[in-house]
Image 1 (cartoon, one colour):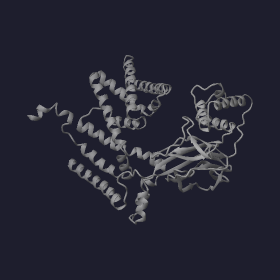
Image 2 (cartoon, one colour; image 1 turned 60 degrees about the vertical axis):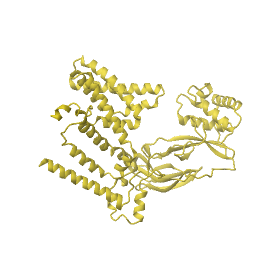
Image 3 (cartoon, helix red, strand yellow; image 1 turned 90 degrees about the vertical axis):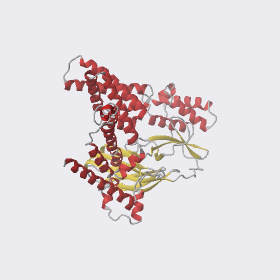
Image 4 (spheres, one colour; image 1 turned 135 degrees about the vertical axis):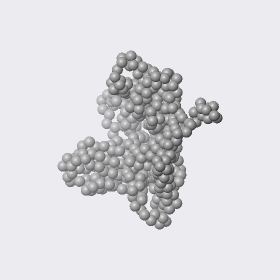
Length: 507
């Protein structure tokens, strides 16, 4: 009876999942594969702060149209605020204001960005006004000395710019650059110094700020560039390498030295930028063709969530796919692993570290943790204090490995912090117990099995077609659930056991 009940339950889940999938694909015309030629992004700026019964004024620079992108369908989301937009010094600015409010406040700006690929360059026949760099005293002497040295080694504006940027970004700057930069030489500070030095040399320059458009990303860091006026047009320069031009995915947001947003009358200002490659155009076209007869289905879909939340679910929805793969590897294939879902969680960490570096970092952490865990065994600790000790050791190892790889110039090593520390702790504990009870070979075999499972899960979970299907058609997870339930009753031979029980099966 239980087996029959399970069969009908799996059949019901499969019918519901495939039914919704076919309805959205055939009737609503949802795309079945990711559209590689869709060059439309949704961008969102979330401004948060605390207000305290004072007049509030918030200003935010807005992105601008460029040769590569154009801004369409802008929206300003706020409750009770007045909103004005203006243009000032080639920048677009939005200003929110309210007479009185209190408590946490959230303001949103969203827009659709479309790729246009214009060939026309921004040409200005009138040279822009050069701003006063405001160097005084020893700083003035250092700036003039540095400019004179660079001018002697350059032939034109382009070579002058390249040499000056090289001097400023040198890891071991000379005395003049060290004095002008100060103790904390951050990238924005280097750009600000470059702008002032170019102005001192009579070359109109301004800093440019923007973001790199990604398929889906949250809390995007700002990217900074330089614009130098040469031959009656503005030329982009990478402030680090000195190369000309900007990447194709770079969206110019604003120009100048002012911050992205300013706040008057409040405190604790925070700004989060998010992007998402649009998947909604197929839905809109379906609306235009009157194929959507029940828009309530879309209202309660993932596409109605904020962009930042959509980016989270794009990652979470591939976890069941990795879990199904792990069920197949353990129950059907017979692969031995540490823990139930540890390989899936490690595979999620591999998304940020990349597979090769992730395997190396994971192996190093487990090896070092095992060495210390075997030492702790001699101290005869109780279970909970021992696990707590291993957890502390794992965190210290992660910190030390991040610092070491950073000093060695291996940027990927910093992403070791993305590994789930509790899972690493339990893996080390399980491996040490296996080591003591059944021997090193069995422990090593399970460790290798865990890495193999994590690798396969990573390869499946990062496939763009899989990610697209489970996000656009999340009802397919019901089908995965049905398959998982059916495999939960499988009690036959596993593939790795066929050779072991070969003679027994013949009898």
